[in-house]
Image 1 (tube, rainbow, N blue to C red):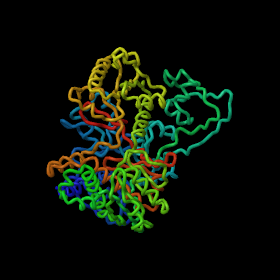
Image 2 (tube, helix red, strand yellow):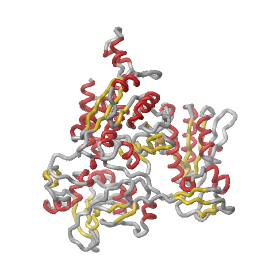
Image 3 (cartoon, rainbow, N blue to C red):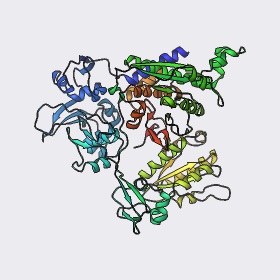
Image 4 (cartoon, rainbow, N blue to C red):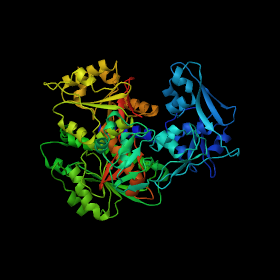
Length: 638
């Protein structure tokens, strides 16, 4: 079974790394020196879009002697040029049962792109037989007939991006993790569209201005600013701003004059976050690297127990099964690295580990870690801290792969899993960005949640419970606001209370715009008498450390592998793959792990990695805000 599991994982994850393509009818072209996607497209009488659709990695650049898939023909799409000559468009005649989602996947664009190119769809919906624009390629405006536009490679020091074929304001905002409004603010020369070859400013360096002891220190609120953006800009808490400006309880309005604290440090609110990087495109193949995995198999303990066989240990030990699952995913990552030719040696060392003890000190003293580029493990937070402290003399990065505990501030220790506090904060930041009315329904036994909100989020409202601790529909109604999104945070350990509150919210939904919110998907929500339909209708919103599979190829691959092997990669298997593969890619760069962590965030199969140093502790801030959608799927909120 274990061999089948590993074989299944190799096949599954290979499908996530390799390009997933149809069998026919395609040609295969071996790239020669000096060729570009544009020149190849002309050679085969296809568009660059057709090549990018079949070879997504080509968007990051093409390499000599690698192979591209070339379509022999385009089936249902036709290409034409706008009357103004400004853009080449590809159209598709809508067939029965086709949706914006299926067409977006078919043509490797986003649903937002389709809506932008076809404004009538937003109003009237998709119609059978409709000619839908599925690609819009802007021609260069310089007058040159044949131009291949190359993207500027972005690092934290690069502040511009050259627009290439098929890119939109929306796709760039997703790529660089900023909003469309921020992009427009940074580039006032653009309006609602961009052209190929445009040079856009992506990152504005943070400017700091110190305001010294002003007696009348006021600030006029600008368009699109929120309470959250103001707290970040002025480096103050919500509580302090509300204390100085009680009217903020009614919401932030453009033109409001806000009183600010003295000795204020004002930061530029448009400073962008780290760009997401494709580290596969920047591998340093000339320098050999070394990775060590410290995994708690506890083999010595297994061998010492004569009463149990290895099979018995595997059957009865949850911790060993967790380790084996993580190990299975890590093996797939290592095999993938080997297939890709990454110049890295990997060493796996068994750690004798329990919650209170380990042999980390002996392992590090008996092995030479002076040339190791990164260490993954151990699993327990305290043991990972010990490993980092022992290896701090080499400044070796130690990645704690599974613990949700926030570690001590150790300069070379990286927490790969966001803590619950970070999840809570990410969720609250999202709610503030949406400028909604926030109401928290917290049961009596969830004091920690209520104290957290009262201490850190002064604008949250709390309905009053009756003498039995119950929340009536009228008590909740008094805290809701019409004409505004009402986010209702629910935290209760009582299934009956959750059932009653969700039923009340369904009734109130006829009067108010309501979305249900939780800090985590807890067991009480699975209680059989709590209607799943209510959670879906209320679009249950929650923070998560993992994202759902999005592409058609991923979903098809999962379905095929599950059917063939009767196995499904669980949380720990995928975590093993994502943490290991991300670490392998980071150490195989010209810069070391710490430098790539400072500059780039990355996306794995399910897990993202955005390491940020907060008060001496490296934390992973790649968090996904997700919700139950009405089509019974979990989606990532925009």
